[in-house]
Amino acid sequence: MPGTIRAILALSCPNQRGIVAAVASYLAESGCNIVESQQFDDALSGRFFMRIVFDSELGRTADDLRQGFEKIRERYDMRATLADASVRRRVLLMVSRFGHCLNDLLYRRSIDALPIEIPAVVSNHIDLKPLVDAAGIRFIHIPVTAATKQTSEEKLRTVIADLRCETVVLARYMQVLSDRFCQDMPGEIINIHHSYLPSFKGAKPYHQAHARGVKLIGATAHYVTADLDEGPIIEQGVARVSHLMSPTDLIAVGRDIEASVLARAVRWHAEHRIIPNGHTTVVFDQS
Ligand SMILES: Nc1nc2c(c(=O)[nH]1)N[C@@H](CN(C=O)c1ccc(C(=O)N[C@@H](CCC(=O)O)C(=O)O)cc1)CN2
Image (cartoon, rainbow, N blue to C red):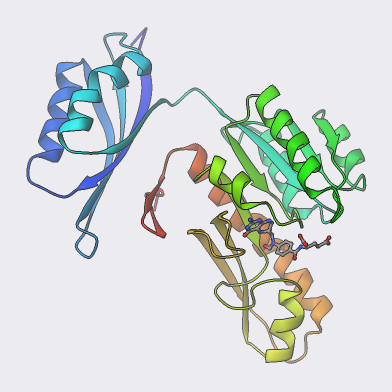
C-alpha cells in the first residue's frame, strides 16, 4: 500500500494486565497493522517484554507514532523504542590485527545481509587498511598506547560524533574501553569475546581452553560494560574439539564461530530484537 511505513516497537515494563491490549489498540487506532509479534513474561523479574513489527498504513511516520505512544509508555512505565524499519543503524566497526570478524561483517553488508550503515572502520593498527579500502569504506587509524589511552579515546569520541554513529562493534578490537566511554553508550557497544563465557575471560582464551582440556570451545557476543568480559550476553556459539588439537587449531576453529556469532548479534541489534533485562537480555530472534 503506497505510503505504508514498516516499523518496529520494542518495549519492556513491569508486568500487569492490559499491556498488549493497550499497545494493540493504539496501533489499530493509528492505522497500523501488526505483521509480527513476540512477547515474554519474566516471572523472576516481574517484567514484560514485547517486540511488534507493524505497517503504518495511513502514512503516520515512526516519529509521529512514537510521540503518540508516549502516553501509553508513561502509563505502563515502559522502556520503549519505536523505529522505522527502513532506517539503517549507523555502526562504527573497530578492529585491531585479526580481520576475520571484520571481513565477515563487511561481506554481509556488501550483499545487503546486514541492515546497517558502516560510516567507517577504526583500528589501533594499520594491518587491515587494505581490507577496508577494498570494501570502499573509510579507514581511520587511532593508535593506542598505555600513555595515550585517554587522548585516543577522545579522538574516537570525535569520530563517533562527526560520523553520527549510533552503535560501536568491537570486531576483535583488543583495547579495554574506559568506564566513562562505556557509560556514555549504554547498550550500544557490542564485543565478540573469543571464549564461551563465563569460561576463559581475559587474554589468550584459546590457550586457557587448551590447557584446561575442554571438549567444547566457543565465542560470546555481549554488550560492553566497564567490567571486562562481564557485559550482558547477546549470543553464543560452540564447537566440539579434541585432544588432537593444538592452541593454533583451536584458534582456527574459533575464527568461524566468532564471525558467525558476532554477525547474528549485530543483525539482531540492528533489527531491534534485543531488549535488556537487568544484567541479561531477551532476544526475539526469528526462530
Ligand atoms: N570496557 C571494556 N572494553 C573492552 C571489552 C570489555 O568487555 N569491556 N572487551 C574487549 C575485548 N577483549 C576480550 O573480548 C579484550 C581485549 C583486550 C584485553 C586487554 O587486556 N588488552 C590490553 C592491551 C592488549 C594489547 O595492547 O594488545 C589493555 O587494553 O591493556 C582484554 C580483553 C574490548 N574492550
